[in-house]
Amino acid sequence: MFNKLKDKKNIYQSHRVATLKESLKHASSYTEWKEIALKLDEESGREAWKYDNQSPYFDAEILSKRYNLLKKYRMQHRTLDLIYVLREGLSYDFANIGHPMLFAQTYIGTKRIIENYVEEMSECLRYLAASECITFQLKEKIQFFEECQKAYGQPALMFSGGATLGLFHTGVCKVLLEQDLMPRVLSGSSAGAIMTGMLGVSAADKVPELLNGEHFFSDAFKFRKMTELIRGNGGIADVMYLKKFLMNNLGDVTFAEAYQQSKRHINIVIAPYNTAQNPRIMNALTAPNVLVWSAVLASCAVPVLFPPVHVTSKRYDGQHTPYLANTRWVDGSMRSDFPQEKMARLYNINYTIASQVNPHIVPFMQSDTERFRRDVLSWPERIIRHQGKAIAMEFLDLTRHYMGDFFPIRRILDHGYGILGQRYYGDVNIIAKYGLRHYHYMLKNPRPKLFKILQQEGERATWPKISSIEIHARIGKTIEHCLTSLRKQQEKQQNDFYYVDL
Image (tube, rainbow, N blue to C red):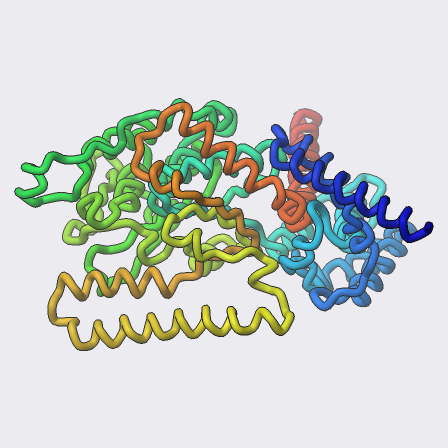
């Protein structure tokens, strides 16, 4: 009798889980998706996992001890002890709490102890910034939080290439902006460069209008006639149409001017046509006088589709001049889709969010569970992947050695080697899901219907990643908010002193 009741319960439970999964697929907003995801975790039994501290992926013991110390010192107002403990582990992945597998077991959220720890860290920082904490003067508090900000670092969002499929990135941006999780450091190559450039020249209040899509509706792809192709001197698409689209939307703005407008650090990846040189990132620090539209055009110059292009700078008097006049540039994603290391050195990056839509990469991308699983059955596939990549790169390298004198073949082999040798994953990965129809979309000019389809796909791909991004970002955003509040207090004090002195 008991077994029958148990079986009946299991049938009902399976039905509820299946129903919730179907509802999850058709959720129209993150709020709706989150509500269903929480129910799904509860119904499927995954909620219990959150309360179990046993895991090979993080150190629960050291995290628990640190959490208890922080809470104890904050409640007892032991400010000096609190600061001492805070400085010991001011890192987004302390005790390895940023491991992707800790966010892959449930539909939403992670271990409860991790969520409690992050919340306690935020509470401690807010306490130190509050007026009730009188151990330090305002100036000392500001100095402390500035040091914390440097130590903790900041996130970066990276947009991959993907031609028209890059409209997927608009959905990613929309969700991150709605949840106040949009990083200030952005990078992009090819189609991702267009997204980065548009965000980089737009003031904060103009971004919602940008993400409505009207700025993207253009005939950026105009294929040349057969007679024109026979003559040579270009790719299969007319680069002037793309150039016009970029100039209309990005304006006559340099990287330095773009930063002043948006307060975002934008990075555009371009690669020299001559593969003897390394790819580089263009930004307000490395190329302040380069026109944004010009760098984006170079990053979109996919070999065969578009010809290599020259990059343009703007002088102090407004005159346009060539940037490295003897060098032509092509699509940055061929050599460096995600310039993580270079950005880390420039902007003190602690973790990266990757929005990946490249059509030749997405089919080979793995989920976090597939990448980090430790069971015995995962090893054959892992060995095949690693060895396959190593053999392919060795083959290309060997071919380059023996056929390197023939320049056209050498260039193709160099580009192939660059594509294989890149790192296509960030710390948090938002990956598009492709069917055959998506390859049909690739070189279509953006239109309202297509924009809506791809943006929704970007939103749906981002929703499961929000809890992970929020956990990663919480402490850094708390430091930022505290520092902003303290600086406003300092400014008010200075103004009050000025008027009193008069």
